[in-house]
Length: 198
Image 1 (cartoon, one colour):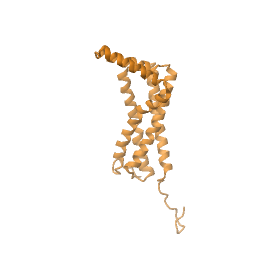
Image 2 (spheres, rainbow, N blue to C red):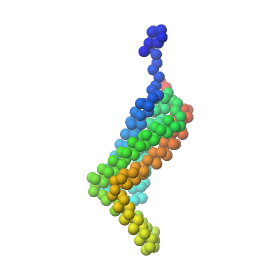
Image 3 (tube, helix red, strand yellow):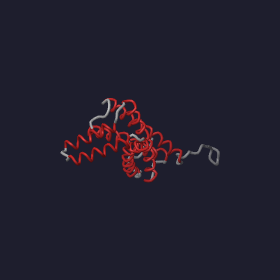
Image 4 (cartoon, one colour):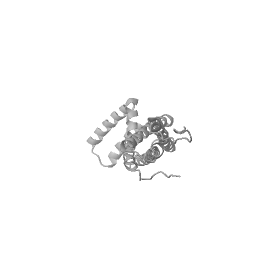
């Protein structure tokens, strides 16, 4: 719009409101969610069920870290584009948490899709793997009996969506919190990976 003299347009400052922040959170949350969801569905489909326990955990957490790189990119985008290259720790952390929350929702949905499409009984397979691992480590008969009872309780609890869904969400969200803290701590410094100016 024109300035007070009406001779030339005024520069419009970058948006600093909540709308810009929410757009960034939604965009990078969906990106992170699609990455982690696609990997999750692909892995369990490739194995036609549950992969070996240790191998599966390694792949799972590696995938989570790859997906959560969207947290760093999202915070940097918000700092450089929406906030003129400057952001405090708390606003940056809030963006990271938002991205992580959306990614966590996608992760939960993907896990439910995996279980529905592969007909995998995860709770039973997990319990069997834990008991087999304890036997291999030389656990006593008493310890195995206690562990078996605990696993039976776990299977009953896992069948309840009100327990299973939050349990699944908690698998990934702490990873997002950690990545958000580190990213916010780094990007609060405007000299760290500054935006390129044309």
